[in-house]
Amino acid sequence: MKRLRLIDGVPELRVRKVKESGIKVAHLVVQCGCCANKIEIYPSGLGDQPGLLEIGGVEGSIRNWRAILLPLLKLGSLRRGK
Image: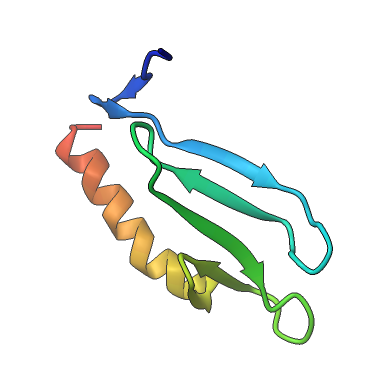
């Protein structure tokens, strides 16, 4: 059995890059470190609307995702005292 790598006391997320194939664009798959739960992250709007990102089926602008996720990431590092 493979040993779990822990980061900050929780299993490390596994990230896999999926290459473009057929009609599916290249994307990232982020999977839980201890189970099969996963989300897919796609760059969308490649044609007429660049700068969009789809995370877990929810599409938004990169600016919008940044506004949502960065405060959460900063909050986590403040709690750990970094």
